[in-house]
Length: 230
Image 1 (tube, rainbow, N blue to C red):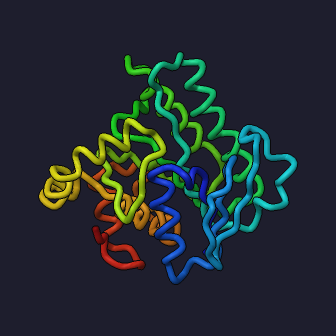
Image 2: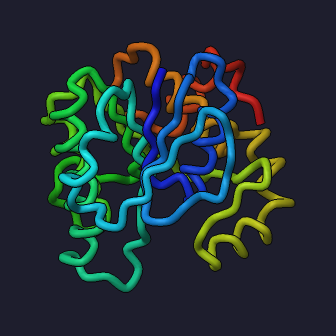
């Protein structure tokens, strides 16, 4: 497979990239983002692109891929709904619309979040915007769209969040989170679980489009890359 990843510098994106580079059936990984990753791997290609709302100048580099793992996301804290819509809905659809046209056989995997509001009518702003984004993605002519809605995720293998507050939170809760994840693996995922599951839905059909934490864990367990370790 040839895989494309958006948001590979974020915590979930780092997990997806790690598993993609380790997977025997992945021949190439293209990471699209505003800044270089600073990594080197024979499978890895990078497309540093400043304007993630407009891909006309780089379309030639975006075709021929089997799946896109879209891990870009921002916190809604302190944002108006218009601002959050631009950085969540508009940015995601700019990429997805382009990719659907260039890669009609592509599978698109979008990381949303637990509590996303598919009705688009609820009181929680971020959940409405995420729900609107999910609904719009499902209308695009991809081979398949999978919507990941994880809740708690523990970073493993040296992966860290880009957000300082989250980095502190994960460090502070690690002594508690690790045993809790062992006790409740379907509720508390690891970055490895999420990465393995994203690759698995990229390679094989899954009947459910909306995947909650328990679904993500189950898919990671059956992954061709091995059981949902970690």
